[in-house]
Amino acid sequence: MTPAGEIAAGDILIEAGTHLPNSRLSLGQPDSNGWTALNGTRSAFETEVREAGWTFFFMAGKTRTAVFGFDKQKTLRTALKRLIANVKSQNCNGIEITQVIDKTFLKVPYVSVSAHARHLQKGLTFSG
Image (tube, rainbow, N blue to C red):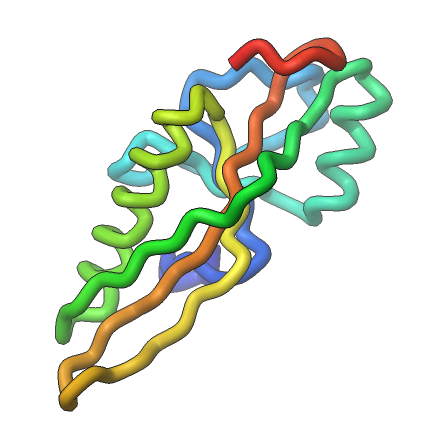
């Protein structure tokens, strides 16, 4: 997440309370949705997960949402809530933001956000 707390492409969020493979992995503070942004790079995180014998599953199929609104922060929060609801319905505990685009339709601003569900767990077989 950006310093202003906005979501951006490349961000990975993990559901608060998700068990992590070791203490070297660190997450930020949970936001109002109960999800936490990953500190550090995705590649370092995935390497540590793999070395610990865990798997960070990447779910096929992109999920998208678009939210209209003049308040960008509120619009982004609403979009994130929708994406999180979709990810939870897939029994996943992570989300990777792939695209955030600001647009307008008939002079009304909106944000379009795309993401992939991710799931962190011990072992190689998905058991969401």
